[in-house]
Length: 340
Image (spheres, helix red, strand yellow):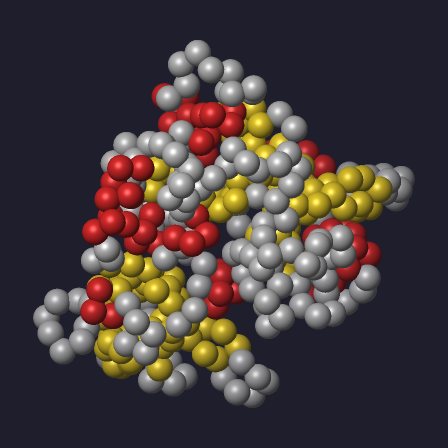
């Protein structure tokens, strides 16, 4: 996995503090139970962060794209006066490993009857051998496996995130064996990727699934409703929180003027995909879209690559099937909005 933001909020008042800063319902989360996707907002209702929140025995764990933890922790400190709630930034303490599930590679233990999209959390046993293990022994240890919506699969299964301590210096070979045992196959090693190729592959899968990444597709200048994750991230019944008035007013007035959508790109042929920040037009001088993430996804063997993108669209291009034109180098292409 690319670097992640990992932040724990601990203390008996952690629920109250997190409730006051998030768009989704977090107070009702059960310790060690399913989590919730949520935005952390500022006083203007803008997105200070975008995380998955899981309740723990002593507070909450927040996980998301890298680069968010310090700003979120500062926001928590700012709005904590006498309450018992302490944010702990743990970005440098964990390495993330992502399992992309399919029909043959699945992590057992998740509730298959749970609601689609549920951010389940389970304990799994892994026999992890660190690189500095001189004896060759590897004792089984209990680690948390988080169901995450960042990537998808043909079977509609979520990704599974496992965090290991960086102090263990776990190698990809060791993790490959451990995950292979976890999912009941020895083929994991054939597709285990690390380093920059792993980062690139993750973002390919993320873009293909249409999941926006904080700091890449959007930032603290954007409103939650502009990110197209409203059903998954915003509760309009949870009560007051920072920036709620802006978000509620926008909901009452109707649609935003721009939002993130998923695009398919056609007409590139064998040429390189469009660059990030490429603008899209529809017969006028004013741009109707802008690409924020672009990925070439290999289709069937010998079938070439399909190009997908995430990017902002103006209100005229919200609906699936809406088309716009762009230029990549000297080559023009068509971008078409893809439905959910």
